[in-house]
Image (cartoon, rainbow, N blue to C red; front, top):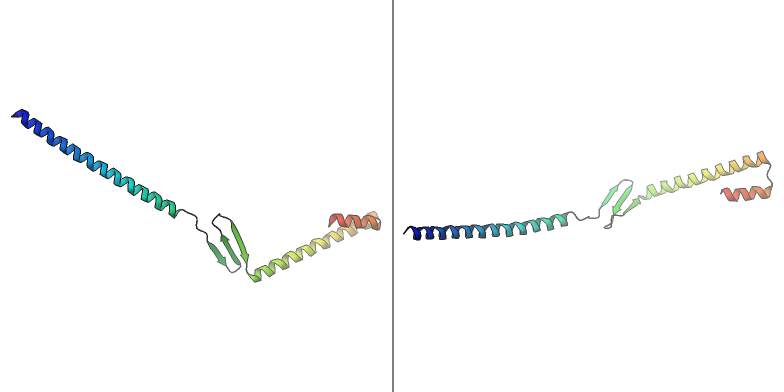
Length: 121
């Protein structure tokens, strides 16, 4: 009888071990599925989404490729144009003053003066 009891006990242990192995396999399959879902969700959440930032002086917009574009309000654009126009006029005035000073110092001929002005401007 001891042999039969041992064999029955061994059979029971094998059945338990098989059930445990099946549970572990099921757990592993479920864990893999959940990990894939988390990875997919993380990938989708991390994708760059274009956006726009606006303020009283204009705005900045990004695009899907990551580049940016700035827009100024009409008032800021007018101020920009005025400042750039003023700086151009100032630089031209300074160039003319420098040329006139050079002419006075070196007594350049009118032909050389015209050539020098064209080169500097």
